[in-house]
View 1 (cartoon, helix red, strand yellow):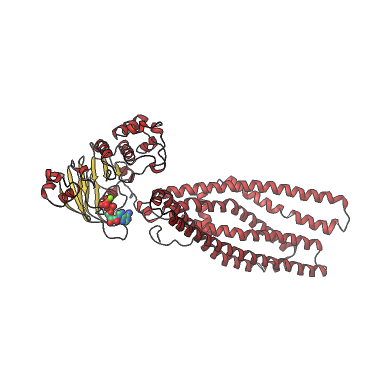
View 2: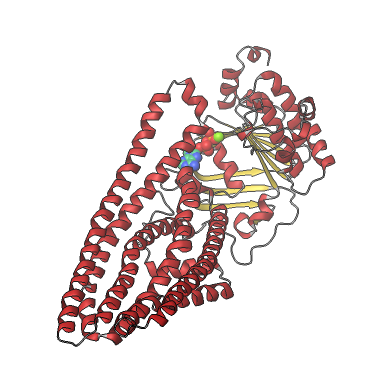
Length: 592
Ligand code: ADP
Ligand code: MG
C-alpha cells in the first residue's frame, strides 16, 4: 500500500468519526443548541396530529360535536405551520454547521498535507490526494448537513413515540418492538458490506482523478505519441471500475431496503391483528388503533430514513478513513525540541560519512563526504543517476540521511529550524515550477512582501526584464498553467529572478541550463553569474561549459567522489573529468 509509511489504517469506528468531526467543527454552541431545541420541538409536535385523530374518532364523532370540528381543523393546520417553520430553522442551522465542518476539515487537511515530507508525495499519487481533499471531504459534509440532522430528528421522534406508544398500550408496542432486533441485524450486516463497497467507489474516484490529472497535464506528450485512443481506453477502464463499484453499492441498497420494508409490514400486521383482537374484546378503542397506526408510520419513517442514512454514514466512514490516513501520517522530517533558528549564514556546508537511500532501495550515497567552502563556487559533475540531485535535496533537508551528519556553518541540519534553513537556500533546477498567475506574482514568490521596484530589479538582474517588458501587459502577463505561454529560456530566467529576489546565502543550481539552446544559455549564464555573486554555490552541471570557472570541481560516480580539483588541474590529470570533457567538446580538446 502506497499510503503513509506503509501500515494499513484500521477501519475507523463510526463513533470516533463523529467525535473527530465534531472536534473539527469547532462548533458554535448557541446554534447547535438552537438546532437541537428545534428538533425536540418537531418531535413533540409530531404527536399532535394522531392525538387529534384519536380524539375525533373516539369523542367528537360518537357525540356529534359539530361545534368542535373547526378546532380540529385549526389544530392540524397550526401544527403543520409550526412544523414547517421549525424544520426550516433547524435545517438551515445544521446546514451551516455542516459547511463549517467542511471548511475546517478541508483547511486542516490541506495544512497537514503541506507539512508532510517530500517522500510522502513521492509515494502517493497526486490525483488520489486531490480526491481526498475534494470528493471525500464533500461526502462528509453531505452527511453532516443533511443526514446528521435527519438522524437527530429521527432519534428524538423515535424515542418519544416509542415511549408514548408503550404508555398507550405496552403489550402491542412490545410485540411491535420484537421486529427491531431483526432490523438492527440486517443493518449491521449490510452496513459492513456497504462500507467496503463505498471504499472501492472512492478509490475508483481517486483513480479516475489521478488519471485525469496525469493525462491533462501531459496532453502534449499524448498527442505527440498519438496515444489519445490508448489513453481513452485506459480512462474507460478506470471509469468502468467506478461504475462496477457503484452498481455493487446500488445492489446492496436494493436488497437492504425491501428487507426493512418487509419487517415494517410485519409490524403493521401485528398492530392490525392484535389491535383488532383487543378492540373486539373491547379492550381498545377504534381511535386508539387508528392513532397507533399513525404512530407506527411515524415510527417507521425514522427506520426508512435510517436505511438511507446508514448508507451515507457508511459512505462517510469510508471517506473519513481516507481523510484520516492523511491526517494520521506524521512528517518524519521535523524540528526537534529546542531547534534553533539559524543565524545569517556564511554558508560552509559539510557532509561527513553520509549514507542515504530512498525508502528501501539501494544506497544512493554510502559514507559520502564533501565540503562546500563558504562564498565559493563548488561544482559537481557526474553521469546521470550518480546522486547529484540527491545531494541538493539533502542540503535543503527534503530527506534525512540514514547515517552521518550534514552541517551548515557547523550546525547539524537536524538541530536547526526548517524555516531558517530553507529560507537561506535557493534551488534553481532544470524542471522549473511556475504557478498559474502573472509574471510579477511568480517572481514575488521569492519574497512575498517585496516592492515593485525589487521585483523589477530582480528581473533585470536575471536578464528577464527585456522579454517581460515586450509583453503588452508586462509584469501582469498571465503565464498560463505551469508557464505554458513562455519559452524554456524565459521560464528559466523567471525562476532565476525569483531566486535573486529571495536572496539566499546558499544557492544550488541543479542542471539549471541543461535544457537550453546555446543562445538563451548565454543570457542565462549572465543571469546566473548575477545570482552566484557573493554566495556559497553548488553548481550541478551536465554541461561542462557551465563549470569551468568553479573554484573546486568534484566528479561523482555512483555516490562516490572519484576526483576533485579545478578545471585545469582535472584536465591535466587525464582522468574521468577529462573523459567527460572530451565527450562533450571533442574539437576544443586539441586546443587545450
Ligand atoms: P542525478 O541527479 O545525479 O542524475 P539523482 O540524485 O536524481 O541522480 O538519483 C540518484 C539515484 O536515486 C538514482 O538511481 C535514482 O533512480 C534514485 N532516485 C532519485 N530520486 C528518487 C526518489 N524520489 N525515490 C526513489 N529513488 C530516487
Ligand atoms: Mg539530477
